[in-house]
Image (cartoon, rainbow, N blue to C red; front, side, top):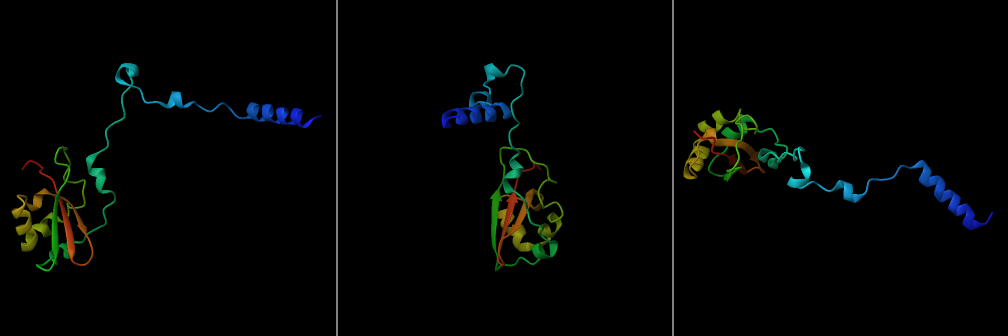
Length: 135
């Protein structure tokens, strides 16, 4: 057999063994008039934007003093969140007891009950992610 015949036979054998791959045209998302009764993918949950939150201990929150840089970041203002979703559910009492954090929150128009998540960043910085839960 010639090289061309061998190559052709090998190509046919490979194509026979592997099923056809889906084309890119089949992978396109449907538009509203093409979907019919198909549901579109749900929108991502706003609270997932923070990613995995490290555990912060109440003692760390209580230890925040005037030497700390305190950041207050409003989080998901146009979405609804559940108070229990962030990592602040067990920290709100400690936040309310800390005069420094309480004062900074008040300056930004928030309260300890509005804190959704807490990130300790280094030894002298804390970020309080707040959300208006509709108190």
